[in-house]
Image 1: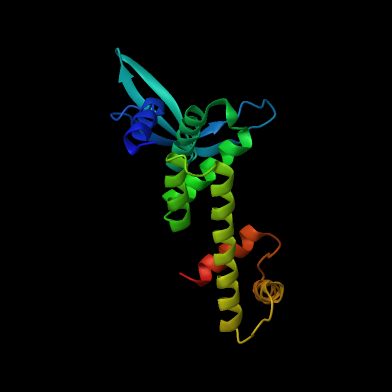
Image 2 (image 1 turned 135 degrees about the vertical axis):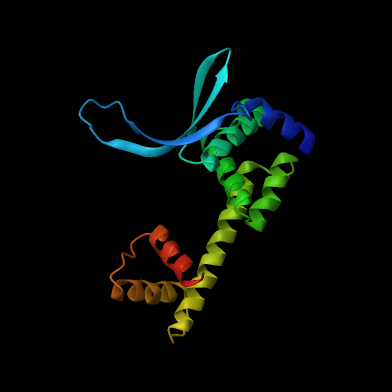
Amino acid sequence: MSDELYSRLFEEFDTLPKKATVRSEYVKCGNIDCNKLHGPYLYGYWKQDSKLKKMYIGKSYEEYYARITSMVIQKLIGERITHTQQKKGMFVCQQSQKGNKTAMEYWKKIKEEKVSVDWAYKKVNESIEQWRIVRIFNLAERLGKIPDTPGEAIGIVRSEMKSKGLEADTIEQIDSYLNSEFR
């Protein structure tokens, strides 16, 4: 698929007018037992035919564009794509937008229909996992330890996190710690 076709499809699904004012808002969820405000969520406002229009964007622009990307993928690939494949395609697109070079390469290949969404997702995930392991080994070495295996390196990093009073039970927690250490 050409970039021109992709752009045209993207514009077709991007229904937020360019002149819209975007606001961040906290909202009630609709559950009668819940009195909390949730958010912030982004909403677009604009005037059309003398009426104020409002459109939900999402928690972030990234989420909004991921939804549009999902619709474009669905339209391009048609009925053959599953909900899981949509999520995988959105993940590759989001990683591409964040500057992940592998994701950028595979997002382009998805658009050109050179690879499947599943294959691109697999390759992007592998690159993220490899990068995570490199950073874990680097941090372990900075702490004066020389691990022999990835498992040993992860154990060293988890111990360091716990010694600082941080939780180290999930990959997200470890990634957050790694991000703070490698800024």
